[in-house]
Image 1 (cartoon, one colour):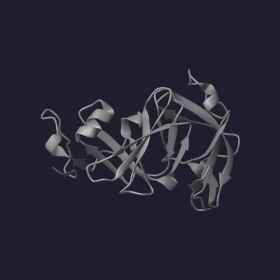
Image 2 (cartoon, helix red, strand yellow):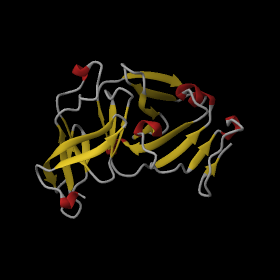
Image 3 (cartoon, one colour):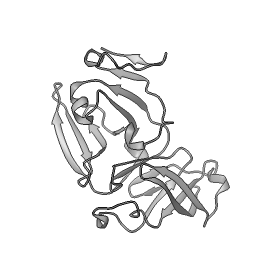
Length: 207
């Protein structure tokens, strides 16, 4: 994908708010940083720098929270997780380290569903845009978890766990992508609702 695009081309990608577009401003062929995010680019694996001239057009509340332009490196394996109003988002590059399902009661309360599904990415592969509020809780293990949610619509877009430093966990539903990779792990199945199940021969099931 990157090798076929050039400066000035219009590109489009899907988000939870619908399809959005941007302009190619540069083909990056060496490592760089954008808003603190490491862009791993080389001549053999160039990355496309894309500018979205109007990231606010899907936002109906508090538009001043977003800058008038958003610039990021676009790859064919880029995925965008967003809150419901579009104010807070996480631009993820590459494949997730792991996708898992959790049936614990705290995840059920957090999601309002019977279980939670999350994808884990290295923080260096995630660029966060927009403002967020923080909720922190301490689990039975004594370690904290920090949840970052949109102050406008309340959606949790990413969170951190003390026992996995350098990693963001992102709710899979925030990607609004039915083609997202399937989970490889299902945990706290002792709290699983009897009418649910996680299918697949490669799934690691934990009680």
